[in-house]
Image 1: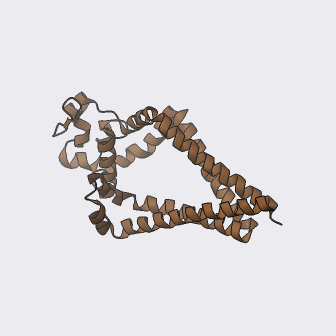
Image 2: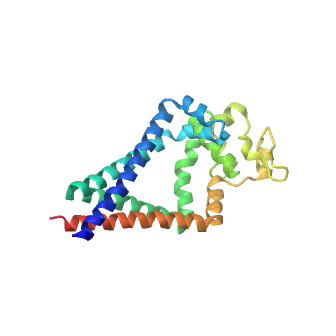
Image 3: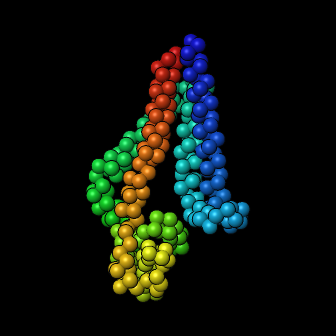
Length: 240
């Protein structure tokens, strides 16, 4: 009985923290989406890259909502000893865990397949580069941060609004690694000559370079999820 009470208390505290984190993310996401201007005024002085946070408002809302629901179900289920809430908490965590495992397998084992699958979705969407501001800013931030060009290479932008409007490719596609500058205007000849890697390949290289840190974080998250699922099942099975 003492073991049950202890695990119940730990479950409540753990999920209360998740609930608070989810509420915070949700609030920030709504703030960024509704009033991004005031958000940027506060954080712009810290870093230029903070301006790109205005583009992830919807992601923060989605992540916050999931954490909010998880935290509520876990906390309520443990406190009220509700089997229904606990099993829902377990199922949601299990789905997330399976999705993470599947994504890791696809990326690490079936890299070529992942490349082809993502290409069929991402490359056609490049037509909006230059016309959709949010889409353009996200790609600019990605290409600037990873020193890459497009998903595969500069040819991904050949049918984009940007190319049709200016007749050149984004300046990131003409990044000269010798002098660390962008050769502009970025014509097709320059882009072909410099041959900047696509962001998918560059992202894989970054992951491999930091594989120890990435693996450690992934294992830590997976361990927490497994522990939470085991605890929720233990409470579920021991509630009379």
